[in-house]
Image 1 (tube, rainbow, N blue to C red):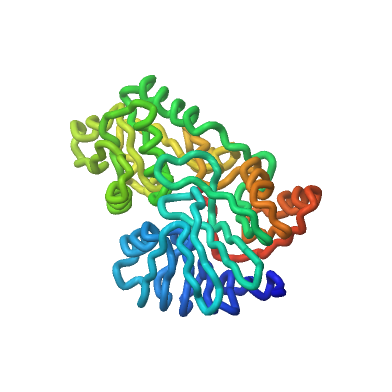
Image 2: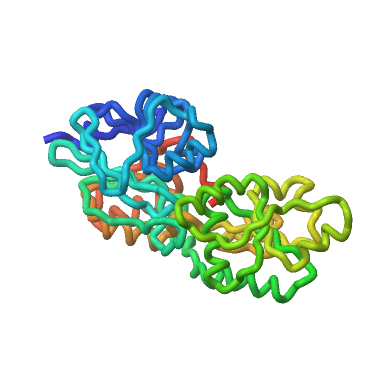
Length: 339
C-alpha cells in the first residue's frame, strides 16, 4: 500500500503529486496545476493546465486575462477527475467564492489539501465540507489559542453603530478585494443597510463577477470624487470599501474626516490595529480561527496532520496531545497579512 509521502510531497514549487504529475497551488509556473481558490498567492498565471472550480477559473481570468493558462478544466464540487491514475475531487472550503479543498485518492489512501478555509457561515460562498481522510493538510494562519474571532454580526453592528453616531464622517473600510470585500457588503445588507455602498475601482470587476454568480450585493457606486468640497461632502455618513493598499495614498485622505476601519483577523492584535491606523478595527477573517482549526481536525479524523504555513507549533502540539501525528511542511509563498 502506498505511503502518503508517495502521493503528495512538499517541494519548492508547492505540494506535488508524483504519480499524478500535478501540483496543488504551485508558487511558480508548472505544467499542470490544481488551484484551490483565486487569491493571488494560490492562483498564479502561466501554468500549462489548470484544474479548478468554475468560479475560480472565472476569477483567474478576470484578474490575469483569458490567456492565464494554456488549458483550463473547470470542475464542479464533488466531481472526480482522474489524472494519471490519481482521483482528484474538489469539495467546498468556505474561504471565498469557488474555494475548494483538493481530495487526492490513490491506492486506498485519501489525502485532503484544504487550501485556505473557514468554518463559519459566509453568505457569499459554499460552506466548508468535512470528510474523513488519512491525511489532512491544513493552513494555520491563526494557529494560536489567542485567535478566537468574534461573531461577524457583532463586528458589522459596530460599523453601522459608528455610521449612525458620526453622520458627518465617511467610514473607510479596508478589505481584501476578493472575498472579504464582498462578504462585508453582503453582511451589511443582511444587517438591514440598503443605501449605496461605495467601492474603490479595483473592486468593481470582482464585485461584478460575484453578482454574475448570483451573490446580491445591493446598490454599489464608485468611490470617486472631484476636488470640490461639495463632492467631498457627498460621502459624509457613507460606507466606502477599498483595498488596504489604497489607504496609504492620497485617495483615502480625500474623504470627509474619514473613520479608518480595517477588516482582518489581525485586528485582534492591538499593535497591528495601531500600525494600520485603524480607528475602528473590525475582526473579520476569511481564515479559520483556533477553535475552527481544532474543530476541523476532529471532524476530518485524520491519521496524520500536515501543516502548510502559518503558526504551526501550537497546532502541532495540540494534535499530538489529541493523538494525531503532526508535522510542518513549511511551504513558502503564501501570504496572510490581509486576512
